[in-house]
Image (cartoon, rainbow, N blue to C red; front, side):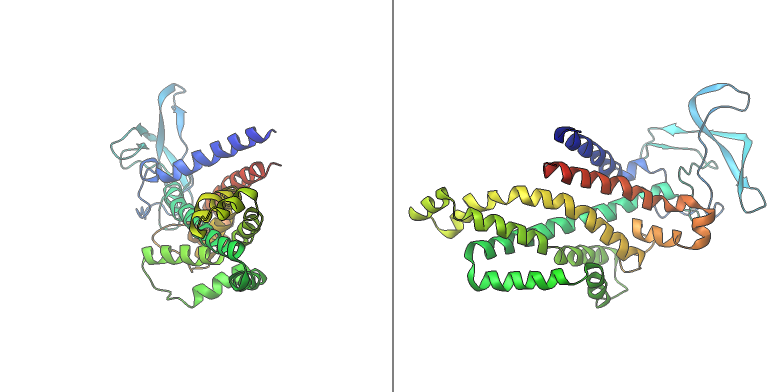
Length: 322
């Protein structure tokens, strides 16, 4: 596959997935906190186009579901509910008492598909925002270290080496453990971004430093300095643009890492807490043995991670020219 084809495929995949998450309020048939206690661990709803008489229907429909008395559910084929499209605030839905659970429900009857979309907002936005923070810190520290050298360079790079020597997951857990456990959703979200992004600046900083060390010796930079250009002008006009390429490549590497970091923290109960969904706390419920064995649709957040990670890795591979 050519480099251009890799970039196009990665951008198309990531664009569709991020658009679906961004439009969660419209694409999700239910609110993420809406509970239907009559349908705990209901399996994915079957969408039909052929009725029980064998006739093809132009509009998709679902049958009512009811407990079968053995811990499962069965369809009541005497009651059909058409799937209505383009509702005022939803893309699709069915009239009560019909239900449409595309990925089943959890233990208290919440629609997994809706929670998957809403939860993606938390996980992906955390990854994107933490990456922006890491890149901002990395570019700032890397430019200072590479352009000015001396004691700022030694101080920043020795600190970077110390941070790289620490296992990042344990460092995340240690930092989060010092913070209050019972905090609001927005506070937890901001803390996740600050913790993950504040730890991930090291690699971008080292790469930016290398670019700056090479760039400050170039002829046109030396010529501008000889004409009396200030350090601020040289950094803004000549040095900073040199770092954009490596920063873009680093972004494609850091985003999936930080998404996984958010998922790991929320899975361990140190991130966003219920009832607000994230892929991490959704997987925490699925980690119970009976859920994995009997209700495999609860593992949907783990499957959703795969195309996200592969898309970013493919984009990083293409941008690096391989």
